[in-house]
Image (cartoon, rainbow over all chains, first blue to last red; front, side):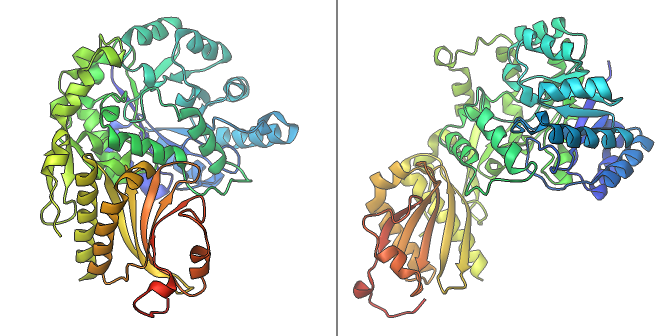
Length: 352
Length: 135
């Protein structure tokens, strides 16, 4: 079955034109955020396309054979959607999106899954932020009317669970291939709730710093194994999921178009000869710290397909980290080079 | 050119911290700043560093940070770490030449944390300073 790629779009019309002109034939659908004035999303906002802009972009995408998905996957709406005013406002916004011809709406709240399924022609997609990680949860959302479910990446390397989810529901399953978040991330709920408010409707909290992001980065600088055992799916490995789904979503709608196109090419060709960090949506800061040759990860999937994921008893990802992770030293200077992560203390030189 | 010097200093700070700690640390950017009050200096935004690391290696770090200040032509009068509030995560190291208005905010504070997100590594009280540079 032909592979379907859902591709991130930052939200500006010029970006859409570039995506379609460069890779339109490889894109099944683009996805972008709507206006944060109604429902937030799981990412910061680069743009806030208004209704007429979404209508214009949807018409353009459809003319070029590309579907349009709008992401409204706030993980916390503070109960506003259950008030009469909040419900009316969100329902009005969904009506507008429906009238624009939007194909699918990604939502995280079960209430919105049901509302979209019941009242609109556009189809509800269950967000990765609904954390569907079991056949039971998948069935629950399917019964609410989900037309598609983005599976929780935490089970990407639990093939028994993926197969059980596949067998439990008749709707489409989507795999988010390059999110790059921590496996079993302890910050996940709190971080996305924070995003939902910080980049959602007013009033927005005036926070000093994103604690969850900073702590996440710190952990992965101290231990890059947390990048290796993050549940990304390499371009070369997506065929291993053929009996689960043929639908794959590339994360990254806060990146430049050039970065997005590089990912589209990699996942279209199912091959990437470069730094794995180039493909991961998060943590993008660390691509200037780590070089992880994608070739060094060939065949790791054979272990992960049967991995019991009791890391303390295993050591596979630890060994792979030692072998594959290299660190930039002297970055941005004439003496820039790569050294093995495990030898960082021995090989680091100071200029002055 | 100042930006070339900044590139080299960024890399050297990163390497120095890696040698001290024996693991990766990343200086995500090194910025020169000038504030409307008259404060000025350099900020190194850092990932991979915690307050514990500073407390253990403070003496060694401080020697290096003072040299770094001299290299960039900044009086090493005030050096502090900025923390993510409520946590031990170090967000940045700052070399700041305090203006007359901001100086009391730090000089009058007791201990090393005049504010929960500031950890003072070094502060020359005005009486101790060799120069009399304003700002």
